[in-house]
Image (cartoon, rainbow, N blue to C red; front, side, top):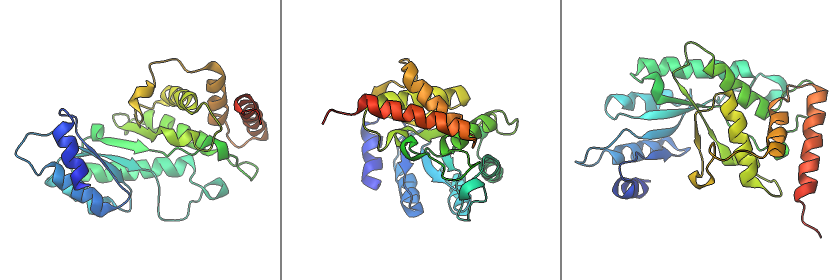
Length: 241
């Protein structure tokens, strides 16, 4: 990570680094290396801080200025439908990260909430009444952006996860996913900038597919519609045998 940070500092033309790791020690090493220079550098982005790692990472704000992605996960067993986090749980985690961030001197604009992207190819709840992961991710963004306390914070997603295991048109799926997420309030993301998300219009059929997953609130009707559209999509991109 230290060598990566050095490369970004040398060749990044002033763009601050995003130090991304699931290992807190690696995050700390990258953050310290970013400031290991006599040059003036802009505050980096740390990905990610969770409620259960906040006490380790947030105190570094006193010595090293940085923004962070707050990943909305917990070490405890989720209590939502189907054994996953409910929108209310995810919103509560956002509030907890926000409150802790304020205690350590972060500004609201320096907080990016990540409600996590689940591949739509396997976003198929197996129990009645269980909302889909895409629904929960998007609805959480909507709730964060309409919350007076959190409205100055950002929402970020790792977009490419949405198209994992699909048979084709992955860039188009990602573009549609971004378009729908932006309608819900998404204002940041981990993306391939060459794909021009948010600039080129999403394919209407792919946008309908993503919208169906975003609407999958646990009802059988919404689940069946999403599955129908996914079947059509897979048939349309399947290569002849």
